[in-house]
Structures are given as C-alpha cells and as structure tokens.
Image (cartoon, rainbow, N blue to C red):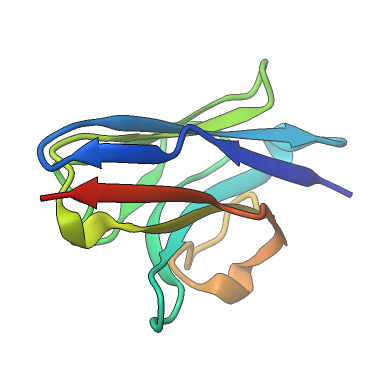
Length: 125
C-alpha cells in the first residue's frame, strides 16, 4: 500500500510561484502514474496534471498548461508540481494521487487508487 504526503503549499501573491512535493512511502513508486488534483471550497475535485511512471508522458488541464510543470524523481519516491504565474483562481487544496502506471485517462479521479490528504495553496490578488 502506498502512502502519499503533500507539502509545499502556502500563501503567495498573484504572479508568484510554488513547488508542491508529494512524498510516497511504500513499494513500487515507479510503477504508478502520479496525478495532481485540486479542490476549492464548494467545488468538485478537478484534474490539474499527471505524469506516467517514466517521467516522460505528461498531461495537463487547460488551466495548467504553460504555467504548471509536473515531474517525478523515482529515486526519491517523490512527485512534484511546479506552479508559476499563479492566479487567485488557483486557490485550492491540492492533492496528489497514485494510479495505474500507463493510464490512458489520467484526468479521471477513478484512475487513482491512493490519495494524499492535500496541501492548501492560497493566491492573493
């Protein structure tokens, strides 16, 4: 069983940057695709970005394209979400998740088996 812990959230001004980390403990981290999702108060959880096991195939929601970069370091059992040019509408709790290594639909919550508890990102205007 995989356990995931997010870190790196915080308060940042619009236009600033944050890097979120997702540390995994448990077997076979490299055999999972890693996804990032976010959930704002009163809204459904939504896909942000994902990376397959090989750190080569990446996927982004339209809102994240050009501003966010997802990556992973299998040697460190850690996934990352670099967020630049942050906007107030990016304010959410951000969650990382682990799912099937070669998922063909990484934007679907149902593709993921393990979830972290989330980290708060607040972007002030």
